[in-house]
Structure formats: C-alpha cells, structure tokens
Length: 238
Length: 238
Image 1 (cartoon, helix red, strand yellow):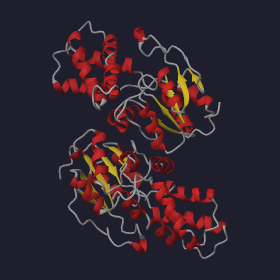
Image 2 (cartoon, chains in turn orange, blue):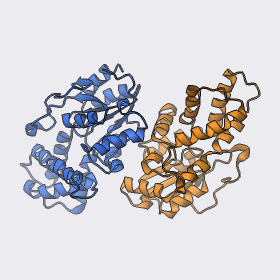
Image 3 (cartoon, chains in turn cyan, red):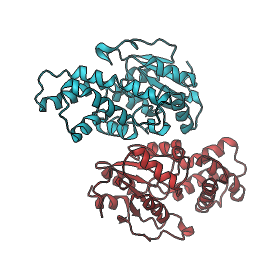
C-alpha cells in the first residue's frame, strides 16, 4: 500500500457518508402523517424514489440529455412516485420542500467522528453527484466538516463518468495517486482506480435495505477496505 | 436595500479577508534572514511580488495566454524579483516553499469573527482568484470557516471577467440577487453588480501600503458599506 503521498481524501456521500434511506423514509412519513395517510411505507417510498436516481443520471452520461442538475432528477422521480404513495395532493411548495429532503439527509454514526480524524492529516471533500447547494446544506445542517466541496455541477458530469474523477484531480492540481476516493460502491472505486486514484472501500451492506443487490463487500483490490469511516481513519494512521 | 433574499455571501480573499502584505513580508524576511541578508525590505518584497499579479491575470483574461493557475503566475513573478532582493541563491525547493507563502497568509483581525456571524444566517464562500489548493490550505491553516470554496480553476477565469460571477451564480443555482459579493475593491463590486449580484464594500485602505492608489473608500452605490467584516455582519443583522 503506497498511500504516503495522498494529500486529499474525497468521498462519495449518498450511502457512503450519509444514510439516505432512513432520512428520506422519515421525511416521507412525516408529510404523509400530516396528510392523514395511515398506512404509509416510508422505507418503500425512499427506495422507490432512489430507484429513479441512476437511470436519471445515466440519460445525462449517455448524452441522451444535456446537463441536468440532480435536484431536477430528484424532482422528476418524485412526481412519478407521488400518486402511488397517495401523496398526489401535495402542492408545489410541499413538493419543493420534500424534494429538498435530499439536502437534509443524516450521516451514518461513524462518518463525522472518522472525518474529523482524517481531516487532521488530509484535505477532505465530497466527490458526489450532489449539487453544490445540496451538499453545502447537507454538510452545514449535519456538521460534516468538509474542507471544500466538489459538486456534480462543477464537473457537469455524474459518476461514473471518467470526467468527474479527472476534473477533481485537475482542480486539485496534484497527481492522481495523491487523491484517495472513499466509497461504499465498488463501481465508483473501480472508476477512480482507472484514473490512477487511491481507493478506500467502506462497507455499507444495509444502504438499500431489501433492495440491496450488490456492494455487500469489496470486490476489487483497494488500498483500504473498512467497515466504517472511523476504520478508514485507523488505516490511514489518523 | 433589498437583501432579504440573499442566500450566499461570497468574498474576495486577497486584501478583503486576508492581509497578504504583512504575511508575505514576514515570509520573505524569514527566508532572507536564514540566508544572512541583513537589509531585506519585506514590505517592498511583498509589494513587488504583488505587482505582477494583475498583469499576469490580465494576459489570461485577454486571451493572450490560455488558462494559467494563479500559483504559476505567482511563481513566474517570484522568479523575476528574486535577484533584485538578493535571493537568487534560493534552490528549487526553497522557491516552491516561498511561493506557497500565498497559501499561508493571515486574515485581518475582524474577518473570522465577522464570518462566523454571517455563516449562521447565510452560506459563505470565497469568490477569489486563488486556486482550490491555495484557498483550502489558507482556510484550514487560519481557521477561516467557509461553507464551500469557489476557486478560479473552477471558472477557468479570473475576476473581473464576467464569467467568474456568472459561473458562481450558476453553480449555486439561484438568482443573481440572491448572492452578495463582499470585497475591498470597487471594480470587483462593479463587476458583481453588472451581473445582478448584491454588494458589500469592506474598506481596507492599508492593503497595498505605500503602493495604494485607489480603494480608499467606496466609490459606487452598494447595498452595504463597511469598515470590517464584523460591520458587514452588523448590517446583515447577523
């Protein structure tokens, strides 16, 4: 393992640093409750909403669609699923507020303690498909101590498009092996590795709940394999 | 004054948030001392170095030169002035370290107290000609509490190129009047105003020392005119 020269550690956020499923389930359940819906399944709502995420980004990456901010992709999917969850009575303000639930998702319990330790030795930032406003709001609300923020808008591309990793390295002005990618998704790390970055796998086997079909363990050869961000800090000697 | 809708306040850094002159003078004097130079004028060194900054950026803005990171512009000017300050004996490592003095400049005394107050109500970030690494290192070393960082590399342009202000607004995904620019330089604020941004003038009449020829006071009509970042916080009701 040659991680001596790493200067910055960048992290996937949705799933790796934050637990979107429980946060979105709670936000959905909250508004459903105010509307008098009694049999609302928050977990199913979160998973159904999330299911539109990858296909929405794929249309941008394939070139089928021009650059589209992630908040728009979230909103379009929300509109699709509201009827099936009995929430088609929501007005525009309520839909906007609910869409911004993605700006309010909570970190996993180990994320902030781990990041605070890693931050003492390295620059830390998200390398996420979130927008600047989403990632900044999320960090500020939850106290995630990023040194700076990379957002998908800065790259005008979504992971796993190689442009994202290349642009992050270029903006940092360092060599690819001086940046480490931390993620709970094997394909994200494989894409980072293809650009010469160092990699840290963080296992999040419950991220998708009953919908989880992969990423139960590291399937590649990474510099670090850990069960938490705190364990990444341990292995980085922080 | 209609600043009710402002969501983010972005700041010039060199001169507005930080006092480059005294910081660079001290770094120059320190290395000169280790080389046995007794009559080194740190203040003149800082001003001479800074004098290459605007012309270096102007060549990029005019299109005479392609995108050139600010650390390169700093280094080229450093090479020019080292002989006249008796520092031509510096080796490459020493030159690199000295060039990174711009990553280590200190805030004015009112900057961090003011930013901490503004941050409670608004998103805060630099909108600076610094590079990502420069601005991140500077903030981390000095404890400047930015929520995120805009760097010139993200815009591939230097202020006062309109592209910088336009790109910052676009990355935030808000209306121009929802962003306020804070700066000690009238032309920076005029450029921000031309894009529809709100403006806060912060007076720094000693920034350039004996070289200061302008920006002794606000010469335009700004939303806020203040003598410190703390006074900006006062006027924003923070």
